[in-house]
Amino acid sequence: MTDGVSDDLRHRILSRVVGREHELELALAAVAAGRDVVLEGPPGTSKTTMLKAITAEWGIPLLFVEGNGDLTPAKLIGHHNPARVLREDYSAENFVAGPLVEAMEKGGFLYIEEFNRAPEDTLNTLLAAMADRAIEVPRVGSIQAGATFRVIASMNPYDNVGTTRLSTSVSDRLNRIVVDYQDAASEERIVALRSGITVEPAERIVPDAVAVTRATRRHPAVRQGSSVRGAIDCALIAAQLCRLRGVTDAGDERYPQLMFDAMLVALSGRIRLDEAAETTPEAVLREIWEDRFVLEPAAHTGPT
View 1 (spheres, rainbow, N blue to C red):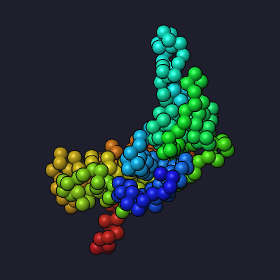
View 2 (cartoon, one colour; view 1 turned 30 degrees about the vertical axis):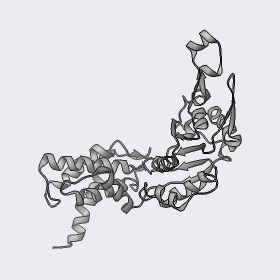
View 3 (cartoon, one colour; view 1 turned 120 degrees about the vertical axis):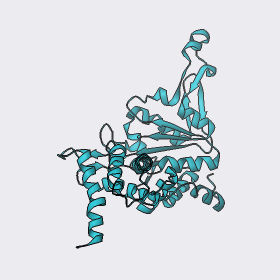
View 4 (spheres, rainbow, N blue to C red; view 1 turned 30 degrees about the horizontal axis):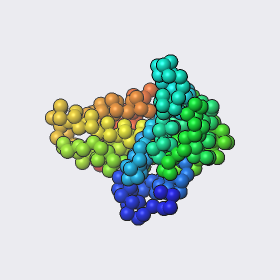
């Protein structure tokens, strides 16, 4: 894959992701060039979807690892089976490969989410794998990486609790791609695709769910708003409430309250308030709801 990507392959990969053509093209170029990558962006911005699209077309595995304080070098590399060690002593045959070794041997992508939450000594384990495409495992020997092996990391720039600054040695080996939220039109396409809502008034539910979700990212009291996953859930819950309450028209006077109920369920647990904010998620969502369902309609109607 380091010799380039055919135009046909590029289009097949791009067709798998909504609203991420530019970032996906950058990621594809980087991994096709044999480089390791850090994807920097908030949750729900299609980082995993992009990697699934590439690895599916390449026919290689995508191995997930969650970066946290419990991720030790042994969990990343692997360990010898304790029961077999007692019977047979240490050997290459009773070594249980961890995700790093498995990804290297199978030529897959090792995807470490929340990369900057992992301990520094664990991240340093990756240095040889990234620089030399090989690591030495005690009592096993040298593990050589397949041609398509890549280390892919993700980091959330809005979350600094429990995170650590990457060392120069690690960051120097990673190419950085910023993946921000999609535009409103792309998010509406994603919500419509993922929710599959067909019940009336679907033509209103999807844009409303996307609009209120995007508004959580702009509210001054909110440190981190909801991802598009919140919009998907909001739309799905609103559609079910429409069925339960017999609402089939967005002009029904019950529709605005129905959407507010869906917002509370889908979004209140997804937003992170600023530490200095003297408010609640429910109050923030009420403000956003009023802007969308009270003030905007009033402005469109004009004075009577």
